[in-house]
Every structure is written in C-alpha cells, then in structure tokens.
Length: 79
Image (cartoon, rainbow, N blue to C red; front, top):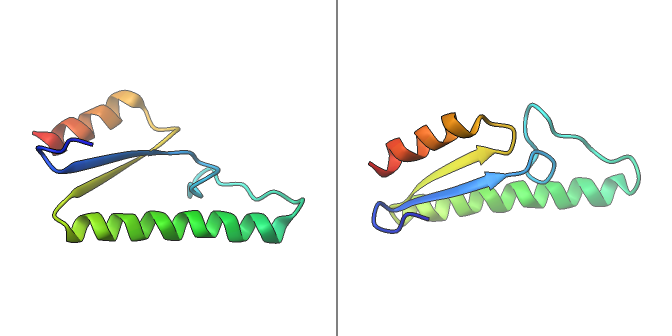
C-alpha cells in the first residue's frame, strides 16, 4: 500500500483468484473448491469497492503479468 498516494496494490495468484486466462478448477472436491474460489473473488470485489468508496485506487496484478509492465502501472498510479 502506498498510503500517501492512497493506492492499494494486490498481486493475485491465477488459481486462488480465478484469473480469466489461467484459472483451473480441481476435479476432486469440486463443489468445495468452486465455493472457496468464488468466495475469494467475491471478497476481492468487495475489498475493491470498499477501498474505492474510501478514496483509494486499487491495482490488481496477476501473478503471470510482466513485472516491468505491472511496476509501470503502479508507478503511474502513485505519481
């Protein structure tokens, strides 16, 4: 978090946060996993909304993103 700039940065794992490009669904205990991963995504959206309402900019970076590109996005938001 960049408190002075009010920018919150999250690095999300493709599996845990349901990346649109790389998400997978386990076959064993599939109902439990679907509910767990859906809850993670709902929590992420709730967090984004709450922070935005409090005046924060939220940046979410996927684990597969190029680090230089991600850093440039963050730097731009903080500047």
